[in-house]
Image (cartoon, rainbow, N blue to C red; front, side, top):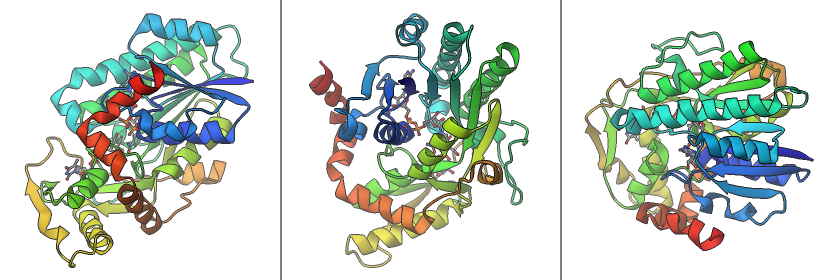
Length: 348
Ligand code: NAD
Ligand code: DAU
């Protein structure tokens, strides 16, 4: 039996990865390690919490002693590392929190894996899940490839770039078997409503203003989160050792065009007159250091592992909007803060 550690499994992407691994691989014991910060919500994975191969561990990756003990107790065969501080705006307010979790936390996991596995790397794998933001900003042309030089602009992306470098360094210096992926913007269910798409869906439902940063002419490449989880599964099982793969949606949108599309669909779904939600758009002060454009060339993972997005943006967005409209309780619990009680109710 394989013991797999997934960090950050109560967050947005992590919850989709945990669900996929628990359901698809009954032969694995899955350990979901999460500190349950503001972004961690056990309601995201309540559908699988009673499965016999699922285990939840509440803990902080910054706590070195705890991480060493966890590894020596379980001797994991594989690690999928998703736990992170993930929101760029928060990194501008409090960069040190990002260094602690994203850099020191990753170091603790690397050191624990190295210590635990040092005599035998056979069948072991450390998978670091990262972001396209490490490459900095594109101009109007071009795509990020796996060989694009790192050029991070925000404290968030600088901390992720740093952790990526340490993962590579542990591979080169100590032979630690790793794979690394850099992915574009995800969207889908269980996305914390501080990020553009879920924030704006929630604001439209509640007739609140839609704060578009700057002139809205910033471009992001959007990928449906379940397609990211499929890619992560594939890279974990079939990716080549010591390799990086870029993952993206081949799906670039200017923020303002995306927001207008969201407004149109929401008007239809909510039975409001066309143009109602667009009136909520408010142009606000720009994000400092705002990257102009991200776009991923995902041809390596496509050619080598056969991955490509399985849903179109129209399908993914429709599914996403329907999910938020059908799960108002989830949204209410998150916005009221009552989702924090779930751990106490279930685990203590
Ligand atoms: P998220 O903020 O939704 O979830 C992060 C999870 O990590 C939460 O459950 C939180 O409780 C947990 N966590 C935070 N600090 C911790 C700590 N010190 N110890 C243990 N657990 C801790 O993030 P997400 O959007 O799901 O992103 C997951 C990973 O994917 C991150 O590494 C992020 O950099 C990367 N990524 C995200 C996107 C995206 O569009 N969201 C795109 C590419 C890469
Ligand atoms: O590219 C991958 C990254 O995508 C991940 O590594 C990050 O964890 C994830 O948060 C995301 O970063 P972004 O900064 O691109 O996502 P966010 O949803 O915060 O913003 C998307 C775009 O929308 C960005 O250009 C800023 C803009 N924006 C965002 C918010 C929250 C607004 O105009 N108004 C807003 O209120």
